Structures are given as structure tokens and as C-alpha cells.
Amino acid sequence: MQIMGTCTTCHDTFNVGNHSLPLPLDIGTGRSLLYETDPNSIAGLQQLRAPTLPCVRVGLHAGCACGTAYYTSDPGKALISGQCSDISRGKGLILRGLAARAPYFHNGVAASLQQVVNFYNKRFQIDLSQQQMQDLINFLQTL
Image 1 (cartoon, rainbow, N blue to C red):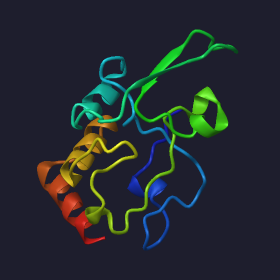
Image 2: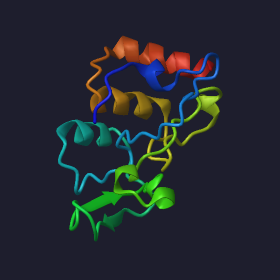
Image 3: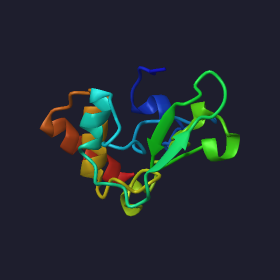
């Protein structure tokens, strides 16, 4: 499922930038370039450094997706729920104080806010100009 929106679709808590709903999302940062097939995900992952966490194979042995394998460095909520739909899903992080909390994403694959912005711009085809990306980085550094 794809959700069309803006930054504030997920970071919607006023003056905090937290996600107000308990809705875990998979934005794709835990996926492996070696096994990814979606071109937008590949473009986004190419903006990040390789994860220092191991890439694990999660295989499904029952149900309608039996035999399907997922490769991720962030199993996410699936470790709690046991549901394949929760693989790589996690809670959106709070934006307040973001500049002081590098590396970014649950698995630490973005060393800088520049990499974060580049990832979102490519992964979700936002098509920001260089000036807009710099403006966004400057804004995130003020939170």
C-alpha cells in the first residue's frame, strides 16, 4: 500500500514532529540493495550508506505467502507481532532535536541530514530542487 502525502502526514504532532497515530510504516530503509526490485526504493537506498547491522533473510513458512523471503536489516514490528506485513515497519521518529541524533533511521544508514533528505527525495520521487533540499536541511537543523 502506498500513502500519498507530505512530511506532516506522518510527522503531524504540533511542535514535536512525532507521529500521533500508532501506525508503523515501512519507508524502505531496511531493505537490501542486493535483493530490492522496486526502482524507487533502489534510488533511495543508493543515497544511504550500507547498514552496519546484518541483513537477515526472513522466510515465510505458512499461509498464502509461503516460500516468500524478505531481506532486511530492520525486521521492525514483525519481531513483536510475528506478522509478515510488519517486516521493516517501525514508528516514525520525533523530529525535535533531530540534528543532535545522528545517525538516522532505525538502522543508522544515514550519517547526515543530507543523506536523509536525498533518500526521501529519491525514494518518494519528491523532485526537490537543490535549494529546496538545502532549505529543508536548514529547517531540520533548527528543530
